[in-house]
Amino acid sequence: MRKYKSYQSMRGWTNVTMAKTTNRGLLQILAILAVMAALPLSLMAQQPTAPDRIAGGPVAALFDAPSAASERTAPEMAPLAFTPVAAVSVNEEPKEYVSHRFWDRENSVLFAASAGMATADFFTTRANLASGGRELNPLTRVFTGSTPMLATNFALETGAVMGVSYLFHKTGHHTLERLTSIVNIGESAGAVAYGQSHR
Image (cartoon, rainbow, N blue to C red):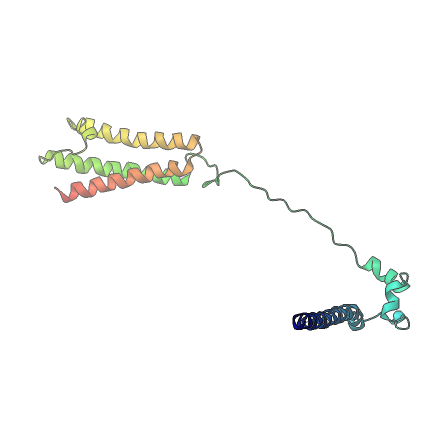
């Protein structure tokens, strides 16, 4: 019997606890609903109203037909035009140089410098060979038999630089066109400096 009574008392205590929990949950739900219902009204009370809608109040303004004031302001508020933006990728390589004539000022200066350094290299090589020196470049060594042959070598070298530059110019490789002369000038300057230091 005691077991039955304790079971009954325990069951009654559980029912009371569940009832309290249910009542508390209902109260919380009702409180949340009340706050949610009051929130739009409080927000509307903070918004400024038009002078001709003060009598109707903010709630009545929601259900009114559009008034003259709203019709007056509607044309003034022009809709924003939507402008579509599309990404465009151009697959062209940037041109280092704009198309130019082959015999422009820059090429003329570079070719003159290349011919001048080739001339300096010719005189330095000829002086070293006359004093018992030996040509280190195997391609130029073929032309070291006489002074006219040596001069022909350096003239052909300058002509080859101009020809390669022209080939790059016609194919649109303007950077390489200029670089050909610059590299040749650097090589000739290095050869002259070496020849002068080893006299």
